[in-house]
Length: 116
Length: 117
Image 1 (cartoon, each protein chain N blue to C red):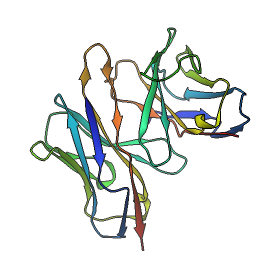
Image 2: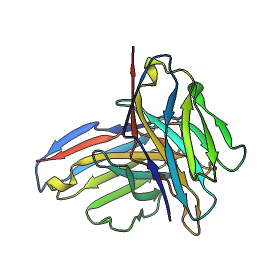
Image 3: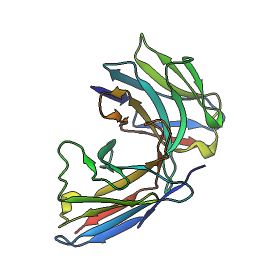
Image 4: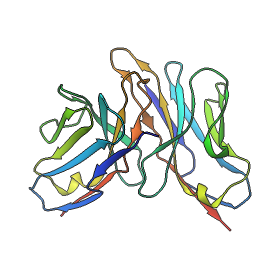
């Protein structure tokens, strides 16, 4: 079984300040982890992914995430928020399921608000 | 990048009627498409996986006779909600995967908001 928990449903930051979106995972096997972003009326867009290589993963738009197995966490960070970062963010876990291929399991999402 | 569209973006229908939602891959061929459902304040839940030219595989608890999925071409999959009821009101999202891509690499559509009155 696999699951992800996004600890904050809403996060509000000021423009230019750091962003931290928290995600904890549970997986019976070595997981692959992803962060997706969803802007209003747009499809989910892949920000970054971890697939058992480097534990610090860099993504698009200055975002990065660190896989910490000891803490079962995969928090998303960005040093300086921009107004265009305001969106819904989803943490996603998957692993190889015998006979079924990879199935994506989504967190409940974190709404990021960026204020002037 | 690869683009997936959905039509309509929102739809309102009366209880007991059927509604069809289309999912198209615009600039690539998708051998596999996925349908998800998202309730307010909840995560996306996979409903079914469809492969072009074959029957869809439904997740446990999803009624295949109620949620009809057709993937007749490499660029189009449709989800038909039959005899819709208010509890079917939800946000439906499709995704598509290119041939040869990792199973987890999916491109998502913008979603369709269904309201059943």
